[in-house]
Length: 238
Image (cartoon, rainbow, N blue to C red; front, top):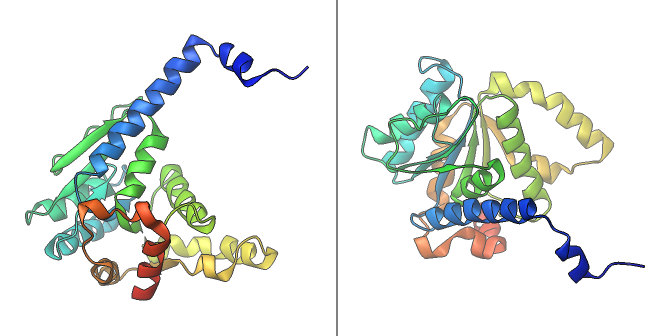
């Protein structure tokens, strides 16, 4: 005999309920923080790269350019690429938001954040990083950066989030992904239109131009509240 929904719910353990409440608390705090500022440009990339690395220098310059044009810089709030982008924006008085995460080896917030929040759970953090963005920028990174870039692309592909500009910065790094993506196209598991969302470039001004074309949405007009309209705006700007 099939159990009723009520009977299944009764079998939930206290640990399950506590875990669900913890998930909800983390997600709720993140969403509330996102609602406090206009959407900006979310920048992803390795936390392990030193500040004198060429990609960090590019991230610093991008942060500066974005701030000069009035765009908030959003990142995971830690070191490496995140620190570099935050630093560039912070130096000229830009707004820098960091969504940090508690890790086994503590990841401390970088000192160039004007706003921030520390999460317990990766999924809640990724929701905040996405909802805060009108443009996505991915610098070279490891498994975490790969997870973030392909999750964003997957959600756009499945119409679960706005189709907003996606930039892969660092052509010498990202060119290594062209072959597997080409194979996906040959197999028919992705469409060319889905691949065309990605712009691989070293030209930082392209990111700034994309953000400028979208403009400066009001705090009350987060693109996720009507993301099909947001997708049309982004595509019209390309």
